[in-house]
Image (cartoon, rainbow, N blue to C red):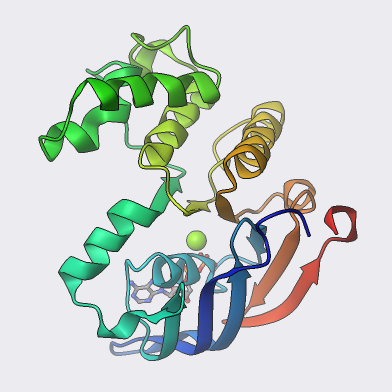
Length: 236
Ligand SMILES: Nc1ncnc2c1ncn2[C@@H]1O[C@H](COP(=O)(O)OP(=O)(O)O)[C@@H](O)[C@H]1O
Ligand SMILES: [Mg+2]
């Protein structure tokens, strides 16, 4: 294991998620999982197997029906919505396929948008945003707007935005699903670079097997259950 990967960050204990309704769906079935700080983990599995549900539960965006989710030793079911939101804002970065950038605003403004909204923008924040945009390889696109950027460049803006608050963990749900192969590979390499340089934990859902193979660890979910949990030897 590379440095920093030894400390437990997240622990799922007998997690179940049932979507109630006329036809209830048992989307996660007795999931037990420990994720260490600094890990680079991919989640694979067929469509409808529970990957996004897992991300939502892990990211405190949805609550499990039963079981326990621990973050850094703390049991999160005791947290109220405000505490969860605070924790998410401080510790978690989200990257989704539909990058939800505002087309009228520049790359720099898009990265700063959460801070504009919460009225916390200052010159330090702007410096941080520029630094992050540089890290993702967009130092020459600070003032470009999404329609002037390629799909891969826009995804980099979304990545920069997710990294602004220096989260301990980044969740990405099929972040390269809409991108061509080369751009996907570039984004992956960027994730790996940030993972090793900033020691951020990455948890990535992907359909792309060849990209999943580049992780430290692959988890495969089928029908709401973990059927494979493999540590890749090349990163041991
Ligand atoms: N909000 C929801 N309400 C009801 N059922 C849902 C909801 N979200 C997902 N599901 C169902 O839960 C199962 C797992 O879905 P999901 O986690 O999105 O799978 P994946 O991301 O692997 O494609 C599927 O059967 C899906 O239809
Ligand atoms: Mg999904």
